[in-house]
Length: 336
Image (cartoon, rainbow, N blue to C red; front, side, top):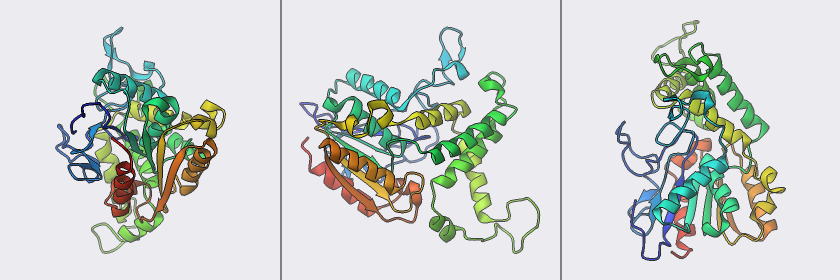
């Protein structure tokens, strides 16, 4: 999106979250749905495509454009399945760097991402500091906590317990582990919301009925909502990709990679903007503060803000004028 300027100094890389894709600011060519960050990216918007060239790519390991377990293994002529190598966040970033090399972009004006995208932005700054002028890290963390690993393991076990999973070799006959993947999505989706948001939207309201059935149908609206989230998810995502990408998230730990978190950014000339949300319990503000403390210890230029929202972790994807103001202001203070 946008145009690269004469000295190739205005490129912004946007990194997507766990089940996201590269269609940031344009309609999806298959589903026709609007891009997932159209409110943030476009002409005159906070990430202004009249000023910047915006690049986004699907992460490796996914099933929405880049190579992943559903891709064909050239050695066998069949899908990789579980023979696909386990990947890391840094692998995703290295693949993005190769893409930018191909596009002739040596240095990024900014790397921007929320959630797993924020981890990629941090990894960019730590792995390629000379190529990263600034990084915007939204609703993210420097490593996965035990609680986050636990939620992911519940999802992975749901997939692997589905009889149709068959050790990941389910592509040939079309019987997919849809039930397991739907449950995995339902469990994960709860972590993207907040108690206040769920209460405000659903409370204990019943779904299409005046009284409880005292059975096991979806009596409550929140049950129906989660079931819908699970069913719609399996229509667009691959179960093996979900296993691989959640594993990459669980293995992410910048401090482990570099000795300490501060060491990951020692001597960095990258400018950082770190944003958290007060109701995000997946990556709470304490995680963002740990990033900022490490940046301060490393002597890096860092700004930090905690924004208020009732929407939990997903707040970075939703309408939020304060987030728009922060991103626009931070990018505007740089030089392209």
